[in-house]
Length: 619
Image (cartoon, rainbow, N blue to C red):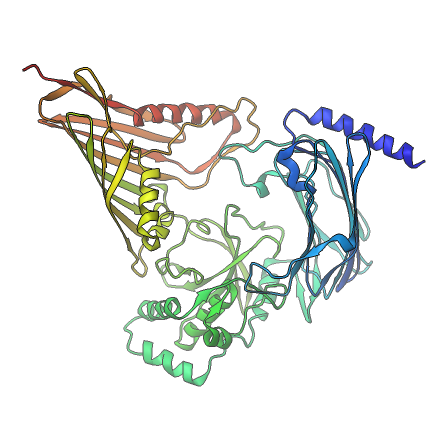
């Protein structure tokens, strides 16, 4: 009987692998998740995964790992690896699993049980089955995410959850091709024959593209607390309750705070003093202790130790502001590439970060407490335009953080090229970057000189370039915006190309990494430009003695739905001035427009690649 089962599996795997060879690295042959909720505080989760790994690109799928902590235990596990013929290559028991000895976090009560396996050849099929015991309550249940990576095809995947008759299950389906069915205290969903999804340039974030169903309770009991997930207001009330008593400060520290702020003439000046104090006296670490990593350490502890995570540092600043008479809101948000919190589905399963909101008469002030290198009040690119949950004594309120106009994310480069008769050149650069363009360069002001030089040579297109000097300065003013300046001098013994009596001089050395996107004829996903920006290069080229201009680069404008590009050229005496300006627009565009974006990029690349032709004058 066993041989018949193995033979059947081999046939299925062979069929799926053949059908998926086009663009799949991995085939999820079977996935089954069973969630049995016993009460508000306990559940048993049983899972099975059968993967066929088709090539080396999918080899990491052969590794098993599951996160555990004091409230989540791995109680059963088995694994088996077979080759294309069904021959068993490896059998894995629970005793073969390893446990992490430490975490990347400074402090955590979680650990990972894992097994690493490197397939000897392909295709290979890996089967893992395991059971987890969850206790002390759940804010959410395991999600159903059958397709959680690019180039993975899915043959069949199912999910089934059962709760006690006096409980209800909430769910939110996103990009799911099958409906969730409910019957009394149960909910189920299954999908079959999902084609592999290719990673696409400038595509939507994975959370917005892959199918997923979130499952959560309506009411919960969690580590001694009770909460209600039916509205964002009630969820915010529970989160605010976790802060109770954690904003206390010692009498000595209160006196120190007042000594620092009582002479301040305005609320903003008090905020600036406290933010500066935070920068000088604390550092960020990731801490996942307490109520599921959701409750901050007390302000007194952060004050005493000098470190904290986003929760602890935010709560610490909130406590200091409260002491000097300034109200603020502990704010839960998702930082990164995914912006929305679903208005119809209150959840703490999506947010991953905390910051502070200080209401002001004209507008709210948003304070990032984990990175004091950012100007106070600046809304950085990882949270700009994101939904967030303000948590206060009246409950939670969903808001959306502001986002800066694309044109403000500016990089202005002023370049002077002194070309010599032997095609060598001296290059002088003064570059100013603002807003998100500065965020990308903040590390430069703290980098070593070698790191700065290496960055410059990778950024600029200066053949055989040598850096004579470089200086990086960063401007950080409270309630201002990040600004960074790079001043540099380079030389190249062969910047241009000589041919007979002519020198061909590249006119814009600032885009060494610029490339036009490749065509994607079968583009499926929308085009997503998260952050727009503006690049301006003002290049002045000094012509060497004995030469004149034979051919100028072409000027003109390029206009598309994605952005605009302009080139202006002016010859004056022994100099040629070229000004190039590229503006990209943020937004989401239909997949059918990707070809237009590629064409726009090619036109821009041709403009950046233009050359000035100089010819020797007759003697």
